[in-house]
Image (cartoon, rainbow over all chains, first blue to last red; front, side, top):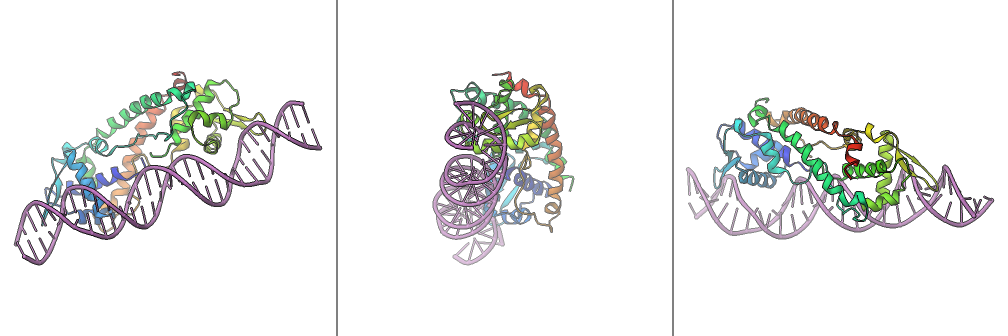
Length: 135
Length: 135
DNA sequence: TTGTACTGTAATAAATAGAATTACAGAATG
DNA sequence: CATTCTGTAATTCTATTTATTACAGTACAA
C-alpha cells in the first residue's frame, strides 16, 4: 500500500471521534493532516458512502461521525480504502506458456486472501474509539 | 504496497524451487514473469544479499536457491522486499499544533507494528516449498 | 586466446500513479 | 443576497515504478 488513504481516513475519523457530533470543515481537517482540502473532501465522500460519516453542505457545514466511534472497526476503514492488493501485483501478465507463469496469479490471489484475513482479524479487534482514546 | 517486488521475488523463487539446483538465467526468468531482465537481476541481487539465492556469473551462469525451499519462509521474502509501511503514510508532516496531528504518527507506527506482526505470523507459517508445490 | 553467453550495476528515459491545485456549481445560513 | 461551506471534475505537478540502454567483468568452450 503506497498511497496514504488509510492513514488519512483514520486521521479524519480520529478528529471526528474526539468531537462529539461537532461538525468539522474540510479546511480544518486538512490543516491537521497537512494535505489539500479537496483530498479530505474526497475521503469524506468515500467514508460517507461506507456509512461512517455524515456531512452537511453550506455555511457552517462539515462532517461528523455517522455512528459511535465504538461501532467503527479499523477493518471497516481498511475495507473502505482498500483498492490495490495487499502485497502487490505485477503489472504485466505472466507468460501463459510457463507452468508457473500460467498459474501464479491464481495462487497469489489465494495467498493474499489468506494473509489479508489475518490482517482483517487484527484490524477488526480495534475500534475507532480505542484508537482515538490514545490521544 | 504498490510495487510488485513481493510477487516478483516469489515468482523467481518459485521457479528456482521447481528446478533442483539447476541454474536459471535472468532472461529465462524474465520471460516467465514478463518483465525486464534487469529488474530480475536486481531482485536476485537483493535475494542473494538476504541469503536466499546463489548466483553464478559468466557463460552458463544463472541463479539457484541458496538453501532448501522448505527452509525459506514467505515472511523471509516479505522482509527482503519490504520498504514502505504496510498501510501507507502521509507524505507531509501533520500539524504539530494539533493534539491529534502531533501524535498520530507515533500511534500509527504502533498500530502498524501490531498489524504487521499478525501478517508476519501468517507468512511465517508458509514455506516456499508449500507454495511451489501448488503448481 | 578468443568469441559467446552470461551477471552485475549504473544511468537514463518512459510510463504510471499520487497529490495538489484550480475552478465552479450548488447548499445552507444569517 | 453575501458568505461560507460541500461536492466534484478537470488539470497540472510531482514522485514512484518500470523499462531500457550501456558496458565492464566473469566463466566457459571451441
